[in-house]
Image (cartoon, rainbow, N blue to C red; front, top):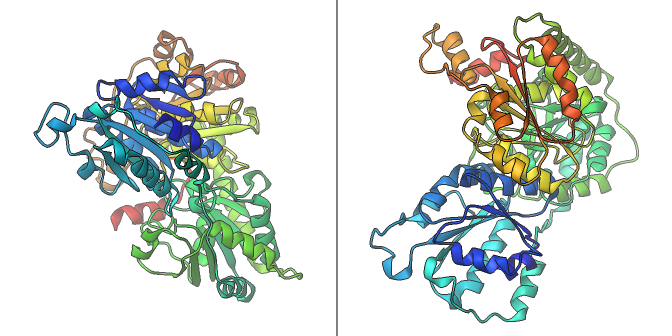
Length: 553
């Protein structure tokens, strides 16, 4: 297994040792100069660290977990990677073969549970079958849609010898993502759609950004040729440089879409979708839909199962973008009316953002804090976020200029991703400024990984937005349930003191002056945790009308 990992370019493993995998760890000892093994404090964190390694660097990571409870603990991380189409390998121990199927200690039906989460789940119960099963798992990881694969190994197999031909390792080394082909007629149809429209737009999904081969310049060239605005999903932030504005409108849809991006999605008469995320998140539960034609390029089979408001071409969006760029006409199409209309939406949105920053607050104004943090962080930044109201601040105020700079549990909507993702980010992009944006509810689910961060020498800047609540649900109770607040208010520790108990510099800001004085900590060398105390009734700028409409449907 270790040699197969090396042949596949997998050199970072995250996990927790257990009796069912202790013999695999013993084998890894022989490869410790080539494979780095990183122990986390929870299996969910191990998987999310491996997930973030790929998102930031394009290098596949692995997680190793104990049978039964270790496997079950890993599944939220696996679900996040599966929904966001992130390739990784989960190696799980399994019960001894003679005890399999007897309801033995540690035994749960891991293969049955894995259904729907993994692209392939291989149960190795015979040494002679192991090479073929490992090959199948690694192949499946790259097939569309990309995603996690699982390999379960019975505990008593680790010590057994397997005869493997060198050709096997050579074949493993050749595995990787393939862009396939696209029909020239489909490229011409897409170009004609853009040329004939009055209000063109391009929506970029994670499927067009996470695999190898995406080129930001070519996307911009296509957009500029047709005066088409670029919208991105959460997984595709950085597909266009958000600092340059112009045709780049950034995130669209539920949970952090900007007003101009949402307006363009609603009003466009020709939408080219590169990838698989024209979905309920992008469209607020299919309540915000374009008035014109929609052409989707994706190889993700789930795209065929969604409400069909669009025409679908089964083709790799990165290859499609390449072909569109190669086929661009010489003349540029100018659409001053469309550009002017969207500029008005942008001005309205920027006014909302400015008002949110300037708002007087008794506690910390999180809009102000993240606006100022955006100015302090270097351009070599990575932002990790999970889910909660706090993530909206990262969409509204933190600028993303390149792909692989923004990581979140976009499609599963799971809390607990931001802090473990910082571990994978520090290995995927050494030297980058890693900012963790987490709510108090989210970070308390994985707070033990502060020890992992210190032990592994990672240096993220962790911002805990503390409103002492599950604010998303609290605000729904206030706005939609006539103030019938139940079980959404929380108590919390002193996060700065908690951080210091792990050996991390901690600071708590209770007002805007203290928040401003904390900004210099974002430039410190080591890990830092900044707690900002905010009002649970604070509502960041967002498309509230469609958010409420989505929740009502």
